[in-house]
Image 1 (spheres, rainbow, N blue to C red):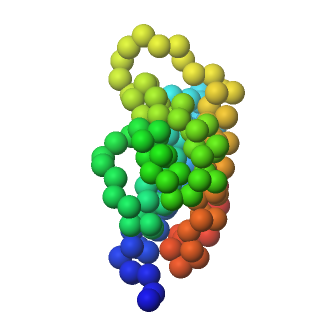
Image 2 (cartoon, rainbow, N blue to C red; image 1 turned 90 degrees about the vertical axis):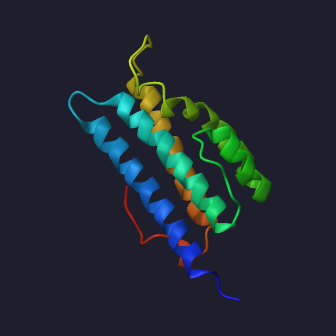
Image 3 (cartoon, rainbow, N blue to C red; image 1 turned 90 degrees about the horizontal axis):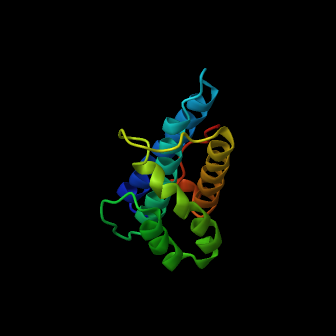
Length: 142
């Protein structure tokens, strides 16, 4: 039986949004001065959306959350080969909120942000490899 067209469309939509977050993070890093807090937020969002795309493709429900550990565990239950990669992503969860509101915090550095960028791109590519071609978004460039 062919995959459900709605599931294909929903999976693609999540991945397109993830890609847009990666692009936004890249643009933030290149701004002068760089908007590192915003870039880190977009990195977290990109990973979250990639993982949710994977769950949508597998028809596994999830609650509304930004917790990459929680979402990642569901993904690993479907594909254990993701465990090492997604355990590295756990630290990105904090960027969903850390710099979004006023408070006492140390400004992120460029290296921290670049590492987050590399990780979210790696996760995007790993998820794309695990999604059948018919559910992948059009070929997009970073």
